[in-house]
Length: 170
Image (cartoon, rainbow, N blue to C red):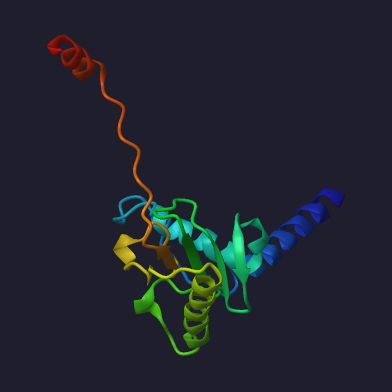
């Protein structure tokens, strides 16, 4: 009898925590039954996890530089420039085409955060943009604040064959 009671308590806690984590998130088709077309969509899954992290556990995000009631800004994990910040609304919005009534404050705040960060970092030449749904690696509305100081890609190491032919020709 005690084991059944324990299972019921664990199940109820799981349902309660799951409801709390997923409340306010949008449905994402990241798991599709076999034979039903698209299978696992990694961008949708990353969007769902990102939505939960931004709204419920922002302290797990690395390199946070600013937080407001409506947005979180952090250093990009894949910088394309000397300054590359990602600004994320704290509401689950998949992309600009998904905007609904009530989302205005979140988008306006993201733009205001970008302005404050550009000023405080002394940026004179920069870009502020988002990408369309098919261009995102995370299906969750986010903006990039990128300085025009592009990081130089490292030159690829020469392969052994071309190095041998170069040294033989000298």
